[in-house]
Image 1 (cartoon, rainbow, N blue to C red):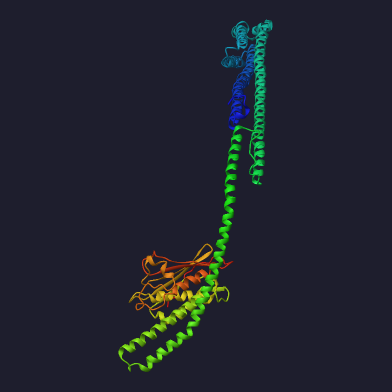
Image 2: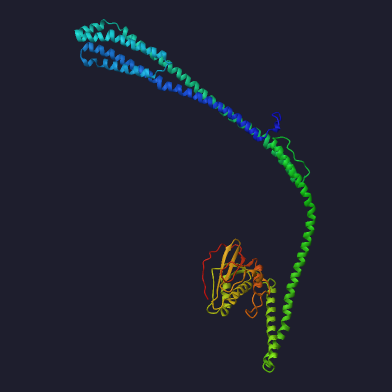
Length: 530
């Protein structure tokens, strides 16, 4: 990598180099601006805090000298001490203004210092040669002699004092003008520095835009065009960076490597697609065959259970006739055999009826309608009132309105609540609690009781047809109730499961889809006791 190879410079390196160069130039301009600003402040300080106060002090000094001359003349005329007050105050003011001017002088102000010395010397000479003799004459010889002395004296001495003040003021004005010119020059220099800094920043921005355009925008547009050609199906097209920085060249190489990998995998995918399509066809054929098989099985179960009703009914009827007619006429073993035959025929009849009801779910349908579960539970409670007894408690919270078949939903709750009443604990009044809660697009309904409960190991087995967890002589039934419940729930688009994390009793949850367009309902508990 060499400086002569422009493509070897990364975009980051170029931007850093540009920013460093601009930063150095701006830093140099900043230092120059700081020095210029310091000089400008110094010149402005000379104008505001030195030249102007010295010039004002010079004017006051000139006034103080005039007051001294006026006081001497007034005292010579009146001879009164109060007429001498301007002279004394003028001397004091002269001393203050001289001291003030000296305090504002710097070592370089030699002209002003020399002019001030001349002023003080000439003022002292005037007082010694003119003013003090006149004052002495007034005190010793009177006002007339003093007036004659004043008229005889020459004004050249006092004019020399005033000329010296004028020269000093001229030197002060020269200092002020020089400082003002220097301040103006430094201000123009600061403006020039600011303009130069702004120009450098604008130029740097233009260079940065040019770099971004030539090294980023154009190469990326070109690279994107090549990628679009590949995306359009030209997977054999090589992707290269024809210009731009080394970063984009490396990016183009990586993208081309990715293209090669995609092209290779795409070839494998195309080869596998045919196999997948063939497998899908086989699966579809098997699914259709399975659907036909299930349909045939349901039809067979329906026909078998329906056709078995008549001969089974006859067997049961004749067994019951034998039991009534010959009860006690035969021996005990014959009566026992007849009882076994009657019980078997009745259980077979119940099994066939339950199987017939199971096979009818989803086959014979009246269509879905809006079903108010509060109304359904009220009907179920009435149906189970005799089985529940006076000590049972069946309650529910506010239930939703769902879409389904009301007879099937009634059967669902009859089986669930009926099981809760059947599998009650001895000597403990049964309590059945039904609640509903909105969970996204479904209503989750829970039926919970305080009965003997279901072990966790049987959580899936209880929903299998003809599966019993207890002996037939302990609890009656065919073991198909929960299988019917599961089929009804799945027919309505829901799912059902056993909640094993309860301290006592059984807790079964199932879901039903929320009624389309229904708003979220508040579950205000309305306890309805038996």
